[in-house]
Length: 301
Ligand SMILES: [Zn+2]
Image 1: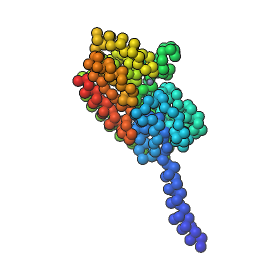
Image 2: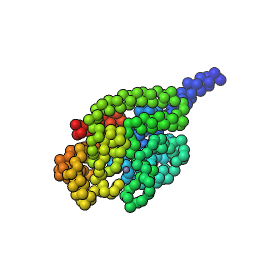
Image 3: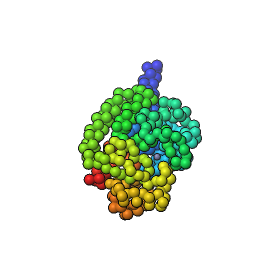
């Protein structure tokens, strides 16, 4: 009789316990932007389940902390965002409402990519009259492939900290990602050689990391001040500057209104490039960056 019971315990309950264990092995990750979702997917592989708060059709500076987002944040084991105030208009509220201790600032499940790299454009003085300035520095670091590598290493540390049982996989995923990404960097550098030192006009000051990496010169922004939509006075002064000293490309994010860029391009015959500011749904970082590079090198050739 006792033997019989032992059999039941071993064959019925033990597998059930095991499968319950593996269901919990999945890390639920809440990513603020598609780039961090794509990176976490590459590094976490089969051990992560992702939810992304924004798409590349949205302005990540401004979204609503909707109840559906709060519900997802409530169940997350890990939060992966940009930080450096990019999400300041919605993330603090979202975190408060989620009441999820795992992902609060200071906890292992709170990962801000910008905490792990050097930021450009740190303002020397804080003046709200200068527009929507990012006090910590420019947060749009995902456009620099070298910084992506630094973030990847730190994010892997975080995955291992939260889920040490799968550390072998996480380390292997990181080395695979690093190898592929490094090969891509070499390729992108070759493809963009002709862009070096070309001058460029941008809509919002969101491309500094990419431009610095490519050696492009940003000569103007369509926004008169950061976060303030283009005005006709600003655009006409821009036009006269560009008529004297033309630029090579006008760049805006595809989620931004193209009206100002179109107007300036018509008047100056400078080509426009509308770039996706983030990967598309389920798109890898490699493929998204491939698109950026081919669009830019096509326009600057
Ligand atoms: Zn910004």
